[in-house]
Length: 386
Image 1 (spheres, rainbow, N blue to C red):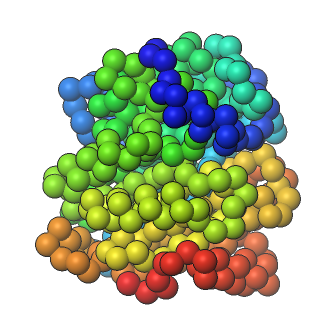
Image 2: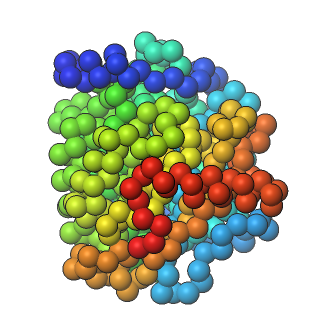
């Protein structure tokens, strides 16, 4: 591993982040409950394809994806880990199946998987560490998740051995894993998801300035996460994906812990990626639900909050599922149009329970949480309509 750039080390020292204690061991991976082809891990192949067939979902009061073939639905949840009392969930292939009716109900769905996938290795020199067994990927796949990003400040929490295990789990994963790889090309390679006749590129990258970004960013000959600092490599990856796909989704780890409004770096990043051709720009890290809306032709969500998470008190427990509607015909021609292909957005408010799993709350809580989500847009510069 090369020495970190001085600027990254300085940023890490100034903006160190904190989360939770390290996890224990888990069981081997279970057999997946639905069919999907994982993203390729070979550096010679840039994308993988995930074609999903889902079983009937349980009855849940939430946004219902359009059955209309002219509309593609995309759903996003926030940060996921399997710490503390969530450890057994990572070993249960059906431990998150109740999310099929919310997150898993869309045509395609995605979350940030904020943990190393390993049961070995030594924790790196930071205060908090996350890890989970490879079976956690089966648990997410069974819940209806179609892709995960691992470009975050916990993807390399257990050093070189943990990262080797994570990359091995990525290669065997039942669903595509983006934002981490054996080298820079692999970490920035998009996965290709297909639905409603559209090719959707999904990419992941981190812009959180701490020791993971400083020491475990992938480069030409070193493994690690995809770094969005500087932004040039991610911008190029988005431009390339836009030239070969109908829709481009970027899942970012960005911003500052507990922020209520997006910081200037996040807004500048969103503007740059919109100009590069991203249709959807979503992210997390702040442990808060932040603003969402339209920025030019892109739909941006600055903070999706915690999702499957060990903390269950408000405001840390406020979360939800963002479901976007995409006009299929507009997406096919979106490279030639300034109009957004995203035509609608639904926020399904949820609260994380004492077991770490998010659920749709009572009607009164749902209305309260939805108002908070709407109000957050006031400091974002985003539009409520396309």
